[in-house]
Length: 90
Image (cartoon, rainbow, N blue to C red; front, side, top):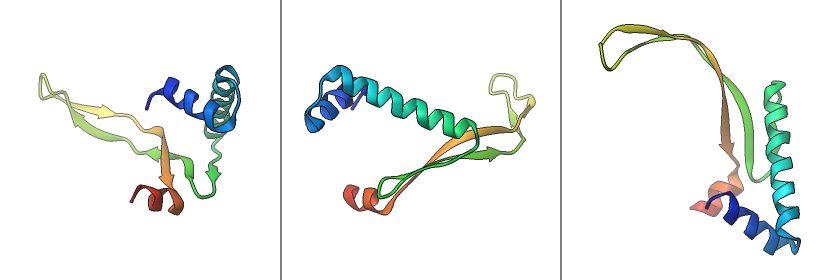
């Protein structure tokens, strides 16, 4: 399912226009981004939790040359599904 299909589904389920569904989805994504950028987590009970994790510095290899390179530490977004979502999939 891509973004357009998701917007169509939201519009149909919520009985709203596709434009309103698109704005709502964009607002949700921006709210999650803003919270994660501030270091907060976003928890939707029954669905899951969006969180930020710290990936430590490590060494890797350049696949072309085989040279050892340093990969710097980074913050990465993570998603942990909730029990209801896991049960719905299985």
